[in-house]
Length: 505
Image (cartoon, rainbow, N blue to C red; front, side, top):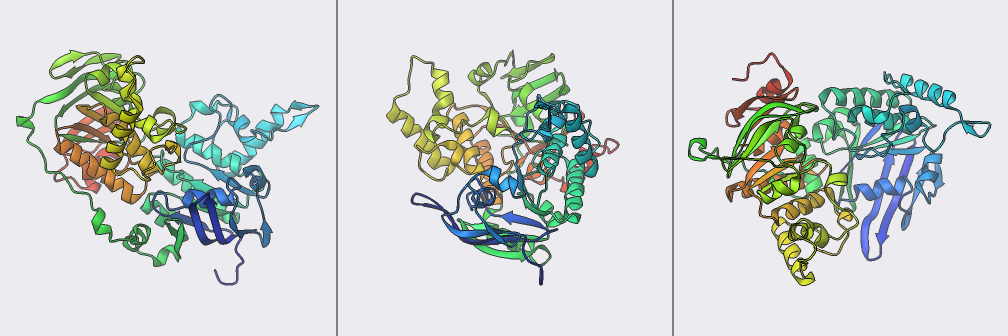
């Protein structure tokens, strides 16, 4: 932007943790009233750069300039006070408090030493109205959808004098209408002159909302580009450092269902709220992709057929025998494993090592009195880390410090160590980069080729088509049809998922 001074600028920025160089001599700039995308594979340095400008990490070398002045932040509070706020993929609010209380959290207005609830609600009403959000400030946050909670988190971030807003994977849990609403809010903030850093693995969203793109690879700067001047295929190549054709996921050939009896069958499966009268059959070596909008019942279906949620009615059969799968320990004993979409609260134990995370379920299955010897633990973890390509190879490293794609591989390794017959994957590629995403997709295909039955749930319809042999289409908690993926394309599947009046045949 010729003639316009950057609102925020990093110059020669490096961040080191002992011998590890997480960010290496990177320069980065953001302009007022601009949406800037930060792109790169998991482990490219995006999170480190974000933490550097938001005060969570101190620069080892380099300078940070805000509004023309060199600044130094020793904490996120200091960055926030200077006008830099961040909203992360995992919403860090308190669902048991009201919307108004969350917006004012940590800076509640006071009168006579007490929190002034009336002023707090009035301020929240004003902030929400300015963003065009019709949300009752007195309502409990946890009763709202994830989309509304995400918008409330943004409202909180801009409720003070914000200059720079960081949005880290803000659309990962939103459907198309909710993404459109978020983009409306982003455009409103642009008009106010806020500089917005938008981090997402959804390329189509980056190209829709962003003005400029900065690409990182292995902690170093690849380049800065105008979105209108960078082809998508060139962006992927710059992110990966190699030909994107190497990462083309292979589409598995359709299997002959008549020759393969169902290993797991569900009939009339119902949970409340969630899924109603669901019927599904899953054969060994088959991948069923599940497609549906947010709230259609995707996760409810996964939890119902894996024993996580208790059935209101219906029956699940394993090898043609009716079984009660709850609690999940019983399902695991029958060879049915579930991987949650929520890595943070229902998956990875971030403070434990990679070894402990991989062997955790196996040890739980054996019981407290049959401890796995440490040498055997390391041997098992090393074999799975090698098989799944978990990087870095330091097995003693806390699992929470790995990139999103490698965290997902650790979760898969934990389940695969149990030798399951059915694997239900809920959003296994959520929030991970394009290279890791295709690695996971190819891994699913390899597992199916070796006889594992897989249910693959994703909000990305292209991914569901690419991975699934058959596609289960969900709308409003019901499976409306199950179709072969062969012959379906994105537009046809989108119509089936989004339009209740569209015939499914």
